[in-house]
Structures are given as structure tokens and as C-alpha cells.
Image (tube, rainbow, N blue to C red; front, side, top):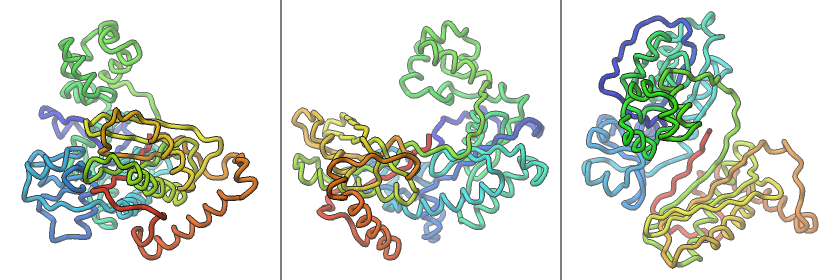
Length: 419
């Protein structure tokens, strides 16, 4: 999801010369919320927030809710205060995955050069599709029409000579628009933006640059590289200077493997009881494993996140001797990692489980452990979990869960990161 700051000075028309502009960035508009509106058309035009209870965060908000200052990752309690009239809906990640697959199928009919970078956005290189489908703006028009007609949601498209500028263009095209930044207009367009629009400039780097008197991309571009490197480091300084001048040679990389699959939950009350915490970890491990199996991945690394009542977030990870897509195995490692976290005696507010270092199942030789060799426990457990998958596919994701999972959380957020 694009979160780069938009610039009030950035125009919506930078010219119509499409030569050399074959990179497109497609980004769904308020994706989770838009999917919910396809199922609840009576809510169209009203402020809608997707998220859990008071202690969770906003996952998505319609533009009507954003007008009140609501945005993703904002605490739900604050969002409700800013927009008390908003309709709050719980997330349905299965519906979002289905909508994402439908959109990406449309995208891949345009070109095979597609790099999906999250559930709701992707880069396309349409250089090879221009003779067949026309200029990039025409391709974007037809793509947006198909997404609206076939999936029922809207998307915005940025078109430019580089990935970085195309992504910025899609942000400025929102909602439901197209922005072409011709190659000759790349630098003028960038010079209208705040420094925080550049990839790699987070809140901390933005403050550091501001301390050096650099608050805009124009100021950054006009600063010599040595000064930037003194401010933010040698590699980062050179990288940001290149971006400020529109230099981004990275190609669209189709078929990039997903890097991690995870889920997390925020408890209704801060918890000391590790039995309940462990049960929550089992549910999260089950969600990770289910998604791994559905997408044909296994994970070599398991990580956990523990957030204590003082909002301190701690993470731990372990690389496995053999990759897995079995919930019980992921849970066993996650439980041990979570027990090893030094909570300083504080209760737990949030826990998360993530499967990392993914690879396609069957792509490598899996070395069985001694226990697996003797008991074949892993294979039997995987077959049992696949049976659960089939039940959920038929009767719904909540029809059956892993043994001993206790529902004590207010909201659970699952995400797939493509990076």
C-alpha cells in the first residue's frame, strides 16, 4: 500500500509524451475497505473503517473516513474519536486475497513482466505490450475499466520511465485516476515533493535531513553528495541523491518469491497468562501454515513478535534445519522463542508469528529430524492439517480451528509481504 506523502504543488498534468515511459504502478484504492463495499453497497458514500476493537489499529479506511483524518495504522480508539459516525467492519482476509488474485490475473493478461509487491499493488513493464494494446495511458484506461467491472473496486495507475517515479505517480493519481510523468518531466515532478516522498526516507531520516535544512526533494537534489552522506550515511546519501534526480535503474522483476507470511493479534486486555498467549500463538501459526500450503511455500525461518504493555516491541527468530508448512512445527518454535523474550515482568499486549525465508515446496531436499524418521510425525501432522484446509475451503475459514485455540483477542491482522 502506498503511503508516501503527496505534494500539494504537484500538478495532475505533466504532459502527454509517453515515449520511454513503459513502467506502470497499479495500486488499489483503499483496498480492504473497497472490497467490503462490494459486499455492502448500502455503505457506499459513508465513512467506513476496517479494523478490530479499540486496542487494534486501522487496516483501511474509505476516503470519506480519511476526510476526518483517519488513516491506516492509526489506533482504532483515535480513529473512532476522529470519526464517531464511521461504520467499523472486521477484516476478512480471505475476501481480500480473492480480490487480489482476481486483479492480478487481469494484470498478467497485459504482460508477463509483473512484479507484485503487496496484496494490492504491482509494477508492470508494458514495453512489449504497446504494439498489441497501445500506449501506456490506453493500457491503464482499459485495465482500470476491467478491474472496476470484474472485481468491483477501483485502482490508480502511475506511468513513468522508472519504478520509483511510477509509484509516486500512482499516489498522486489517487483516488481512481491515472498520472503520466513523461521522462522529460521527471525531475520537475520530483522537485515539487517533500523529502519524505523518497524511498528510504522514513520518519527518523526525514527528521535528520530537516536538521540539515533539507525538507524537500529539490533541496536534497541541490545538496552535494558528500553533505548527504555526512547526514545519513555513505550508501543512503548516494542513493537518495540518485532518486532526487530520477535515477532508478531497477527493472521490473517478475516472479519474485514472497519473503514472508505472517499474522498477529492484539489482546482485549494485557495478559500475563502464558497459557492464553501460547494458545494465541497456535492460532497464528495455523494461519501462517494454512497460507503457506495454499500458496505452495515452505518456510525456513520462524519469527515471533511480542509487544508489552509499555508498547515495547521485541522480535526473535530461528532458522529451521528443515523448511516446513506445518502449524504444529511453527507453533513449537514460536512458543519457545516467545518464552525466551525478556518482558521485564510486563504483561503482553500483542503477539505475532511470521514464516520467513520462503521457498517453493519441493524445491529443496528436506532433511528429516530423528523424531520424524522414527515416527513420521511431521508427515501425518501435515496430512491432518491439509484435511482442515479442505474443510475450511468448503465451509468457511472459521468453520474449524487448531486444537486448544482460545478466542481471547480483539482483532487479528494477517498480511503477506512481497519485498
